[in-house]
Structure formats: structure tokens, C-alpha cells
Length: 393
Image (cartoon, rainbow, N blue to C red; front, side, top):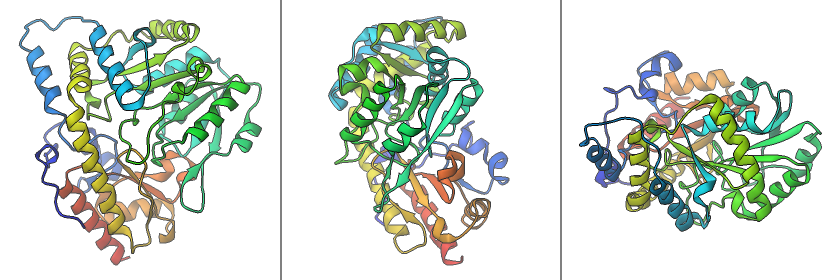
């Protein structure tokens, strides 16, 4: 494996004294605390200093009452999206949401009726499935399949055959979690046209859009044409990019006035308001001042993706480096273990707590998802444990 990463920003930080979800839930999920948790998708990396400083400065004011999200905060995200993704957004298109998942639920209720069908691509982030079911809509599950090079793709001919008159929405993950795909321009154009043809609105989860490795480039679906812009609800935020999930802040971008009014009406019914004032401050600081830290982060994560490839090269685990995200999608099928036995192997033989592939859908059977957004010493330790366990298998 490569040498240690010396950048102080990404040093090891002990989180066990906090209520960090990935540590607190170890015993509940893995039935032991003696496991290195590499499952939930937040980073074991310090949030940028510019964010911490901005929050501390705001705390110098002694009143922490109701505040609305400022136009300057939204403008900071608009500038970021223009600079990094070439997406020209307008202030009036944007609104606050506490999370992408909350936005998905709101969009499902705003743009469909109970009993309508919603397309979800398998494998995918598990809450895509649950949000459809919990809102009493019907799932259309479209299986993503790997080509000969291990790259996942959707099948438009098959997808077209799955669509019925009751199909109203597509929940789209771009870049895709857990497989790490950055969808190409041609793929996005073909998918967008299919949805327009059938009157299907697209809810595009683009929360991972900044964690993309060269030469790949994220293309916001809504940026490809005026028709796509009017038909797409884009969900995004700083949580993954700057390790700010604990601030519970994201945004919803809707250019269509008709769709925007429908969405806002549903927001009023659930009344999630405008969020917390410290979240507003953190949000703006990240987008205005976080670019230097972000560029270093990409180098750190890219190095980690390569470390995993080198460590697993001569093992029965097949690994294709992700085009995006800090999530390694490990193909363990050559180990010839059932999904329960595979999970037990990682927990009890390797001492690692990963996300089981089956939790992402049927197409995830035989896979495990590893979060490599950690300090280099943590990743080195995890890979040593895994390789040692594989040697003894």
C-alpha cells in the first residue's frame, strides 16, 4: 500500500466520545462493538475549518432565534454550481430542505397520487425504496447490470417496457450510490428523453455531485436542455462534500413554476420551515470558502480508491474504482458465501462493519459497500484486517 497521507486536515480523529451514528450503532447493527465501522456515508474527516470558524463567529451574537436562509447563502451555492458544474441556476428556483430524503418524500407526494408508480434503479440507496413504499406508491424496480468491464448501465429498452400509464416519477441517483457511476451525457440525454416521452417527472438526487474523480465530470441532468430543466427536480447540498450532514441542510432546485408551486404546497403541509441559523452560516461558508479544502479532499479520496485497488488486486474480491463518491462497491461473489455468511465474515473475521450489498436491492447480493472517507491510517488498518481475513479464508 502507498505511504501515509501527511495532510493535517485529514488526520485521524476519535469520534467515539460523540454520538456519531456509525459508532453508536455498532452493537445494534453488528452485535459487537469490536468492529471498525465503515458503513454510513459520512466522513471520519474534520469538517473544513472555514465552516467551524463561521459557526463560532455567529455564536458571538447572544441571540439564537428564528432566522431565514439568506439570499447570499443561496448565491454562494449558485456560484459553486456555476463554477464546478456549469449549471446556471436562479435564486427563485431554490428552496431549503432538511435533507435529500425529506425532499424525495415531499416530491413523491407533490407530484403523484397514492397507487401511482415510481421507478427506482436497483441497486440504490435503500431509502429510495422505503420512501416510495411509505408514501403508498408502487415500485417499478429497474435492475442495473454490469457490462464486461464491470461498469453498471441501465437498459432503456427494458425500462420502456416497464413503464405503464400509472408511472409518474423516476427517482434518479446521479452520481450513483452505491455503484459510483458518473452517468455520461449520452446516457442522461437518452433517459431524459424517455421520461419526457412518457410524461414522467424526474427527481434527481445529486448529493454526491462534487465527489467525482478525473477524467469523469458530473453533468446536472437539468442543465442539458430547457425541456429537461422544466421536467427535473434537482436535490443537492453540502453534506457529502464538506462532511456537514449533522447540520441537516440541503436545497431543492425547481425551475418550473408549476412544479415549484406544487412542491411548496406540500412543504407547507409538513412545515419544515427554513432550517436552523447555524446551518445557514455553515452552508454559506462551505460554498464561499471551502474550495481549497475540497480540492485537497479529492486528492485524498482518489489516493484511497487506488490503495483499495492495490490491496485487493490478488484477492477473490473484485473491485472497480468508483468514478464518484467515497464508497467502494466490493464484488465478493467469488468468495462463494451467502449474503448472511458474507456479512458474518466481514464482522467476525475481518472486524469490519460495512453496508451489506443486499440492503441496496436484489442486484446488491454478493456485494459489500465500504466507506473510504477516513484518515489514511484507518484505511490502512481496515485493508490489513481484510487481507488477513481473506488469507485465512
